Image (cartoon, rainbow, N blue to C red; front, side, top):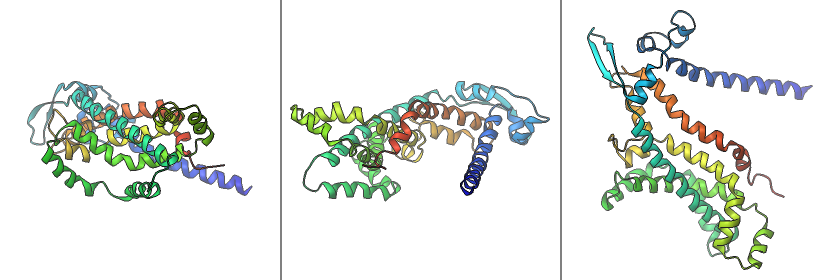
Length: 296
């Protein structure tokens, strides 16, 4: 009886948290289909009562950069253009895909070495890597930027790929180490008896067997890089030719908040890719997160 009451209480609390989390998203979603004047002057909940007018204009202006007119606070008719996010999408993919693949490959090799290879200082180096998890990345931005300026990597994609790789490696190595260390030793011993070298064991055994952990890590890394604003702004700059999606969203609202209606549509457009990545890899997600939690 007590267990049932506890279960009901937990489920009720979770339901309340889900509702609290979902209401702002619902409001943003409804606002993305409302005309500009209604978004700026009335609450989204009025769409269910008196202001039942919906349109795709916000999405057309965000995706195609179509022009629109409005009357400002002084009564002047202003003609403005939307934000074409196509270039920002390309820039975000250009930054994100290598920034996911590179650290995963390096972290997998490092985790395999820490888990199954014997070399002097192994525990010390692994402890040092784990200790970097508590170091805020913000303290390294300016020193790295100054070094980039000296070697000419400022504003380049290579520079931000290296930055995201360095910032993501500690967590990546730690997560993959927890998984790779649970692979049965007999598998490696059989491979070594057959004459397999370390690179062959890593490529043909470790990587295929670590797919769940790699997929979970790919989700984390992809979401972090895709939603990143600070690192991109520091190392790439804010010019239109290299600006990523988050930078364009940050400036989309306008200098006085007059384009807030575009931000509602832009936010949902930017959510499409992360959601697609998550749902395509979610079957590996829980298995990868639970790796190393139970041994025996």
